[in-house]
Image 1 (cartoon, helix red, strand yellow):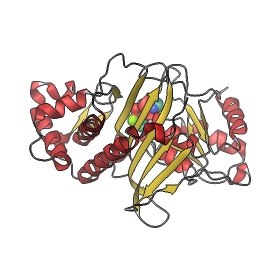
Image 2 (image 1 turned 90 degrees about the vertical axis):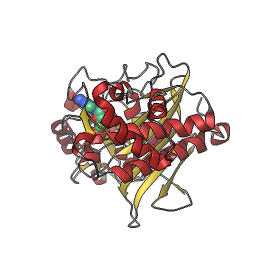
Image 3 (image 1 turned 60 degrees about the vertical axis):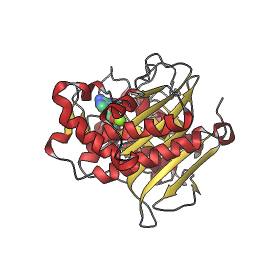
Image 4 (image 1 turned 45 degrees about the vertical axis):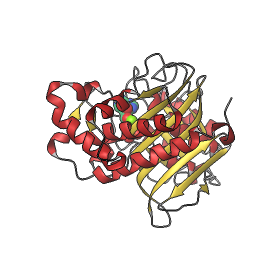
Length: 328
Ligand code: AMP
Ligand code: MG
């Protein structure tokens, strides 16, 4: 059962504070990384000192306010414990100190990052992507800090920090937060939250699709065929990270297509939990490419799903039909 904000009286402010703090860390680091500040992980994806520092800061804020928590986080402190990683760890510690003060030690940084490795997390756990869209972050473009809370296989809270997102009012940066029945966002430096709602274009032809910048993360040839089938005229809006979910939630786009590039790829829960919950609470619908709900009850991956389709809800069935026709 989804929980309302009152039932998350401790978790909601903790999650917001955690994402805000990580947003500051990432803002301070984007465009200022030195040559040795980026690593390539075993799966060939990049990770930077800001990814590690953001995970440390989120875990520090959450455990300060909530005590012991379970979390499935993207980053692994073992990458920083290797004897040849001392310089990297020093740089991560330096970034964490910008939020948590100069007394922070490297050992506490490692301990905080390790919170994200709750093996065999129970029925209730957080999931975190400290920098979703690291490739966008490195290009100086879009990325997100994505924090979700999962209970009995359902997302019950989602907070999405989008530090670089351009807003219609000319300001930059937004934080989206969803609890049962409520999707809200703070834009720029605004102190007041605004309600967020999906757009409802009058016809499918007026809809706009968003997708990954990276063609290795979503099949752009298939999306072009789907867009043509649906009679959509607008060029796809290519944007990194879960900012795509934010774009659908606030009506910048009305369809997000994430189409498998390989049959065996399973999406990671931290790439979707927060974003999908924000879209749903803003009135949208999120499924996989087969129209099945995303199933968060299989540990770190969406084992039972393939790809993602998020829409404003109105044309979801027609979009799934077109996706099925193209994917075959
Ligand atoms: P995006 O910015 O939407 O392109 O997504 C970034 C995320 O894509 C990263 O956090 C990765 O976990 C994820 N990713 C990496 N490889 C793949 C893949 N082959 N298919 C889908 N997602 C992937
Ligand atoms: Mg990610």
